[in-house]
Image 1: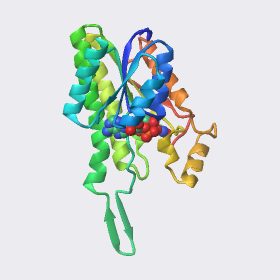
Image 2: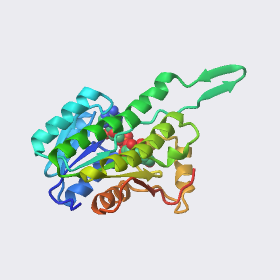
Image 3: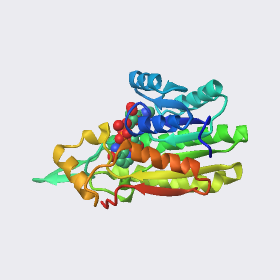
Image 4: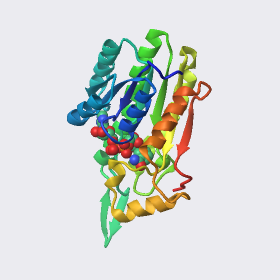
Length: 248
Ligand code: NAI
């Protein structure tokens, strides 16, 4: 796909990886619909990017997602691309057992991450695909997974969601190819964003050391990989690992 003049929706675009993707794709001439829950930040982000518009939406809420995609279609006349990037962390152990006391991960802690990181990807992917199919012009859907999709200590909820995201990427590639829609996923390693800045300093330093390159990745390195999936017309249904060689 030639990105120039294409309309690309990015979720979680108010900051971090989503904002870097918006800037990178806008530099290549894309018109960007920035979708985020954070009203102030998404409006600030859109004010900095030419040919963009900010939208407030919780990707885990079905009617909000349906409405926002309808609105984007009305505002830009078309939807050519989607990056399913919005995501949250609520790390914790499945069970903690110490001195005879058992603490269990609550269903709410599990489900809230599944709601945003898996159901949110499903809802936005479904709406984007519907608009792309109706327009008859095809499109590209990129889902942001994680190195944690293989399963990671303290991340039952996050790992399960991120593995599911890759499975949906493959399923959609098979189902949507006949409508000229391609899919792809990125599995980032540890990247410098507000999300990883929340990690305790010791864990942050260890994360950087886990890569043979001995550093965190930059949001721009993920944005470049997203752009590569958009531009390469023979990529579909696959996940690209952008993790500096890290194995968890
Ligand atoms: P971040 O926390 O800096 O930004 C996430 C953005 O998503 C925020 O603007 C937030 O308001 C928005 N958001 C959260 N829940 C939302 C919802 N329900 N509806 C709409 N917007 C919502 O995160 P970061 O680091 O930029 O991560 C982006 C994606 O990349 C996430 O899916 C994350 O899981 C994934 N990722 C990040 C890695 C990292 O090292 N930073 C590593 C691997 C994956």
